[in-house]
Length: 162
Image: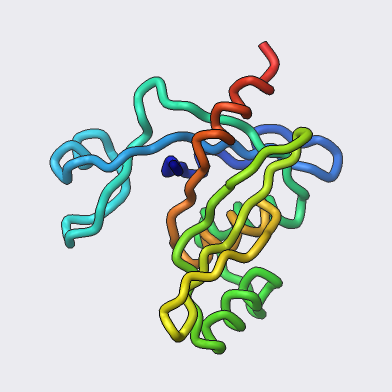
């Protein structure tokens, strides 16, 4: 079972050429609740999500270029020419595919594993292996949901230092 997550913070701290981001558990909320809690979303029938009270979260260490790409997307800063993540989205779309979601599906030996879930032109769901940092950057670029498998959340909770 996968749990929906959102990118909660970027630039938590800098570690030489790396950044730490944090993912936090979110759940769907009613539109009235969302407005009261300041959640993002709209009243156009889109599902709105809000952080889960006492929800789970965990950090992921990522490379500086990916952190910068994610931060640029979150802040709505455009670039004159397509960057690598933009290129991949453009290639997917040119081939008739559409990114549907991102899923962090495994945690082995302190390394997270993710996949891009792409719907091809025939309607088939393809799962493509990706680093979580690249997957998150692509997910933000395409405005798709980010999921984390329960087993990964549980393992990440065990690995966090006290």
